[in-house]
Length: 95
Image (cartoon, rainbow, N blue to C red; front, side):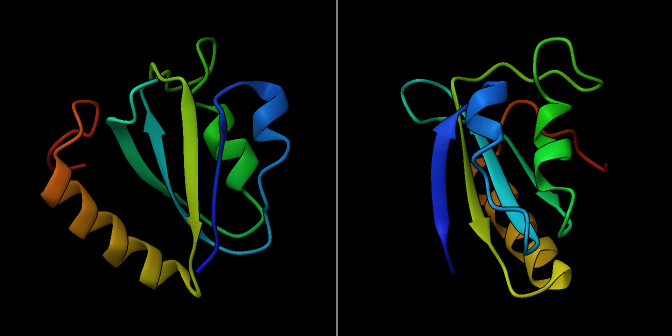
């Protein structure tokens, strides 16, 4: 599937494709995952925007990487595998 990485700011988020479900990673400048999440088709930009400093669920980071998936179920499965493997500090257990 398609991957894209951009800066974690309003201008960078506006460049993200919104036409398929995604698994997104909020990363540090060095590329470490701080948070991994999913967003439904049509809600990608809105969901990532919630993680900006003044958003509903702020997560520190320098960039965001998305990977488009064929379905929301495929995105959920990929998110679960990736969180289990990399254990990002801002993913809460049991959420």
